[in-house]
Image (cartoon, rainbow, N blue to C red; front, side, top):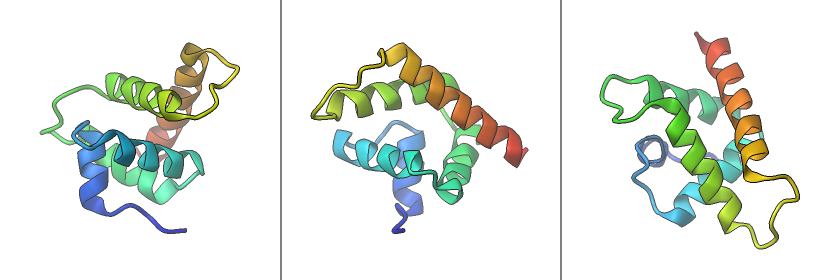
Length: 95
């Protein structure tokens, strides 16, 4: 599995990457990459992160779902909650 580089993951955590980059990182994370998930979690917990974890994940999921050629059957809120549970479980495993 090819991993996004640390610079891209940091920009992703700051919501400072392009829509295409964001979609690529999200696709990668949704494949279950715990290594990159831990790295993003670390960036999100860092002192210089401008926003809390929840809004970043919400925007990321919305961006990812909007970029899909076929819209998912589940409402965005359900998909967002699933992503949130996944990231909080990952983050709690790290801490």
